[in-house]
Length: 330
Image (cartoon, rainbow, N blue to C red; front, side, top):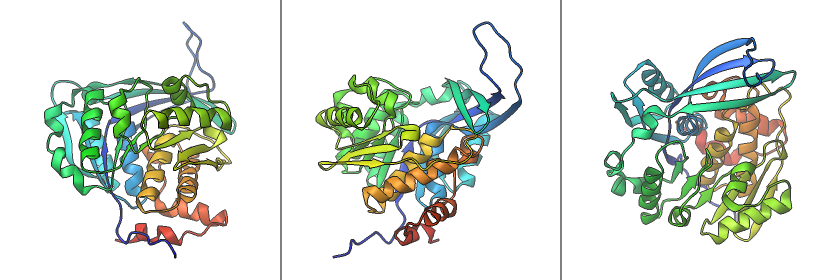
């Protein structure tokens, strides 16, 4: 019997960070104590939470964002950016106590490739308190999935995850930046999506190939996470789920401009497809296509692709895209 897919767009809640990225491009990174001349400077709204919310909305999901910004120009710009993408900002809070978060992004740009170094000053992201989210204890039941990251206080993530778990709402945690996680938090998660470095930090296993990725994923599953998704950059991604281990190759971009937000794009696309009931293999393909497009553009949110861009790439690669049609509905 054919799998019945949902007829409504997935309803996703993202609880996480807002960061205004201040991006400097340079032919090479400076050494300690050295000054080099940069080639370009720009600003772009970012933050792992906001990026993932924007990406899910651009892919057709019904998205609500919860986070906190300062009462400053950067804060207002970041709220406007997610709203322009179709994200509901009704639960975005503002504070006078500190500034909005900023990210100092250095890009070393070479022909057909680039790499980045990022320093984040957390600002208002660190000022989310339990009282800000208590209303979710009941309201969270209306969502098909909750997406979390680690750029806001850990106790907030733990509380949101518990609320979702209590209402049988799937939770995806993107554990970045890397941090130790309590056993209780792991037990609330349906999905966890570390990259190979974060997976190593969480498990003690150096992830360098499929065998080591399988071992790291198994350790996280033994600690209570149902599904483990490890992203490996140009090596693609692996998913350990329901006694299966799926390897999904990277969709390589012909011109890598800026890797910023590629991981956010991947995670958000995977969650959007998964909420539709699409197979893990196809959800991973969808996510890899989204990430491939993201690295071909500059900036965080400005680089995140639309649904039509991702489906066009999938179609060009010879894949059927009918199962994503619900995302195209108004």
